[in-house]
View 1 (cartoon, helix red, strand yellow):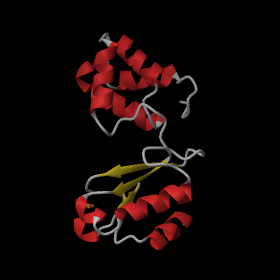
View 2 (cartoon, protein in one colour):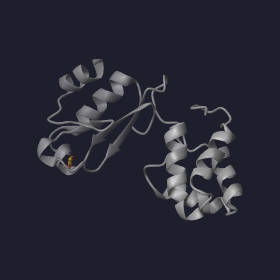
View 3 (tube, protein in one colour):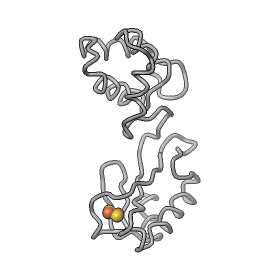
Length: 155
Ligand code: FES
């Protein structure tokens, strides 16, 4: 399946739908698998899901846009989440975010030109005592400083 803005491999979408027995009750799982495969939910894949499950396209889009975990635009191979919640904010989270934006040349909500990183902000990562905190993929990095962030991004 193509990972960028090319036309999606519909056979791969079909195989995901088949694995779920074309069951609209598990639409969320189908969309999760498509996103895992493509790194986002391509429009042509969503149209195909609607046709195969015989549900209105709006129903598929309402699920795809309801959950923050789903993305309708291509995402980077890796994700960086910067916490801007109150506990992290008072400890300098904004400076951490700006350092990452400068280093990777990407704004929050965007993906680097090389498709490597998607940078996002969140309101709390549930580890306030370690703030300011960022998460790269599933890994937490606490007590960040701009210098520490530069080091992490280098590696
Ligand atoms: S406010 Fe940042 S982890 Fe809770």
